[in-house]
Length: 235
Image (cartoon, rainbow, N blue to C red):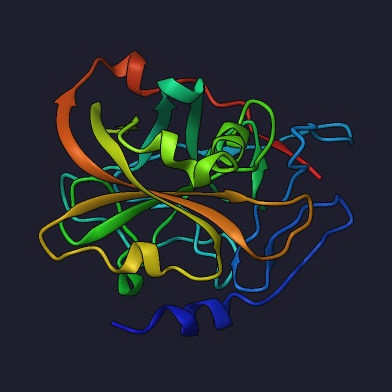
């Protein structure tokens, strides 16, 4: 496996389009957005999404939105994330347009860095969203008290396109992160979830990362696993 640093070096590019879409900055996925919880200041623009399928594994930031490696049979894309203790409930999307988006979370697949999909041993499911109201702002806020110790053991539910819910328990809160080491250090026989959000209002390092370990997997009805996403381009 390559070390975490080379991947971050490949991701070093901050591209801001005329529409104000922030893509990547200084190595980590750029999840810019006011840490105070302010929403987008410009008029939201609706985004057309590709429906998550077992063969559509998400964004690939090293070359912009594109088709990522297909997941193993029986392992489907995340469609929803719920953290009841923090009142977080967001659709998770696969998108073929610019990112990051508002009003949804997104996920990253990078097999050589052990970032993959739910149901695979030895990988971390990597989900990220803005630190904004209605998104991952509660993660940031909770991390600022006692370094996030109060989040330890909170449950995180990740629903998938094949109508399963993976329940994880938060095991680590890593503030001021500048690499993927929390995700790529997962054991070969373990399944882990890592959440990422911004620590400030600008598209720069460091980032907040929260790791959780898999506890259970269970079936759910199709509607529960498939909330209707309404993503918008935000600035």
